[in-house]
View (cartoon, helix red, strand yellow):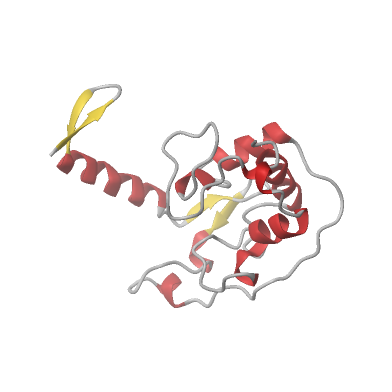
Length: 162
């Protein structure tokens, strides 16, 4: 089976699988960029592996947080949401303006029209396990993936989608 590639023409299914494996191996490295711009040792974080030590680590404790203050910057939030090393929201969600969003998480298209309280959205991004302990969404706050300001920026972006 082949699929159309917008740049090079037709790509075989085998090539897509190979490229996917390369991509996964690239992103399964043991270091990544932290929210503060420095590097982080990923070997101390839980992962979905039966053979690696990270698959045996317990997840961080569930954290319930309170919302207060203001939303952040819409453009910074868009950049974070579409950035693979930071929010990577497009990996699981459909989002206005995003290309080839995922379908594992709920669609975030026209998020502002849902009229959800800021408290709910902040908690969902910070640590969604408060609402769903088995969620696949990373606990962005407890794992220090995003700072408080970055979460506020993503929220500003989400509440601009209507």
